[in-house]
Image 1 (cartoon, rainbow over the protein chains, first blue to last red):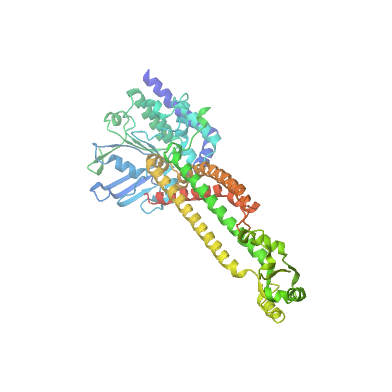
Image 2 (image 1 turned 30 degrees about the vertical axis):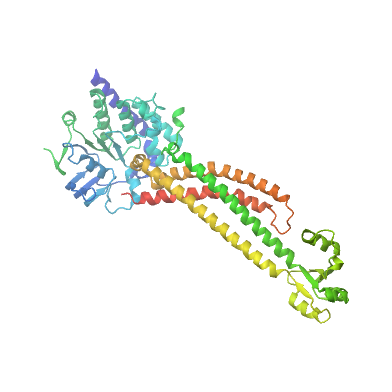
Length: 261
Length: 292
C-alpha cells in the first residue's frame, strides 16, 4: 500500500512537470532563470582540487570529480571526511585553495565574483539543517530563489503554490519554520531547492531527520527530478539508500575522493 | 492569503539598532537644523548690512565747520556729485534719540560740540567713492569725513563669515557622525544576519539584492528619526524668532527665513535619509566584496 502511494506521488510529480511542459513551462522557466536553457557539456569537473581553512591542514586533497549532465551519485564517508567541505565547493560557498574547478563549463577559481549568482541559481541545495529563514513564511522561503532572480509576483505565486500543494504543505503557506515539524521543514527545504528547476541538486543528509516513509518519498522525488535531467549528488550516512536506489557511490575518506565499485 | 504578504528577506527591523538609530539621526537632524539656521541668519544679516551700506553713506561735518555754514555747502556740493540721489541732514531729534541710551533724554545738544551728520543715498553700490568725495569736499568744508560704513562693517562681516564657516564645519562633523552611526549599524546587521545573507547568496542573490535590504532599512530609520528632529528644530526656531522680535537691537541679525531657507531646512531629513541610504549600500557592497 505504501509503495502504491509512493508510486502515485512519483507519478504526480511527473504529471506536474508534464502538464507544465504542455502549457509552455520551458518558456516560462526561461523567464525565471535565463541560464537554464544554456547548453553545457560538464556540470562539475574537479581536477587536483585542494581545500584548507586559513592556515590549517588541507581538508580535501587532490580531489578529481566529474559529474555529467543527468548523472546521479551518492557521496558517502565517515564524519569529518570532508563531505560538507566538498559540498560547499560545489554550491560555490567557497573557492578551492588549489586545483581546477569547472562548473557549467565555467572556471570557478578565476570566475569574477559577480558571475557567481547566475551559477548559483543553477544549483539547488538541501541542507542537513535546512537553512530556512525563520522570520519568513513557508511561502516566502520557497519563493526566495525566484524572488532574487527577479521573477514577477504573479508567477511566483502560481509556481510556489503549485509546488507547496504537491509537497503536502498547501495548508502551511503562512506558517514559519519554528512552528513546523522536522519533516515539514525538510519538505520546505526541498521545495526551495527545486522551485527553480536547478541543473544540479545537492543534498546533505536529506533523509537524516525523516521517518522511513517520508525519506522514501523524498528519494522518489529525487529520482523523478533526475529523470527530468537534473544532476544529483546526495551526501548520506545511510548505507541503505544506495542499496534501495542504486546509483554510483563516491567515497570520501580523509579528504580524498574515490569511486566505489 | 497571508502567505503573499512578506517582510524583508533580512529581518533588520528586529535589530537593536532599529531602536537607537532613529534617535541618533533625529538628534543629528535637530542639531543640523539649528546650526544651518544660524548660518542662514548670519548670511542674510551680512547681505542686509552690505546692501544697506552700499547705497548709503554718512557725511560728518565737524562742529566748527558746521557753525561756519559748512553743512549747507556740503549739502549743495553733495547733491551735485554724480550718482547721488539725495543728501539730508540728520535732525537733532534723531541724534538725541540715538544718544539717549548713553547721555539721557534731558540733555540739550546745543551745549555739546557735536558734529553734524548728513545721510547720503546713492543710485547704486559704489556709485560714489567716499575717499574721492571727501577730497572734493574738504576744500570747502575742512575736516569733513565721508564714511560708507566699511570701516566697521568689515570686522563684523569677517566675524559673521567665521561663524558661518564654523557652522559649516559643525554640519560636516554632524554628517560624519551620522555616517559613522550608519556604518556601525550596517556592519552590526551584516554580522548578526550572516547566516541569512549566506542563504540569500546560496539561492543566487547578488550583493546588490542584499544591499537593497540594508539601504531600505537605513532610509526608513533615517526618515523615522529625521522628520521629528526637524519638527522639533522648527518649533525651537519659532520660539527664538518670537523672542528675538521683542529685542530692540537694530544691529542684531533678524531671525527670519525666506522660502528658500525653509526649503533648505525641510530638505535636511531627506539629505540625512539619502546619506544613510548611500552609506548603508556602500558599506554592504564593500563588505560583501571581500567574501569568496
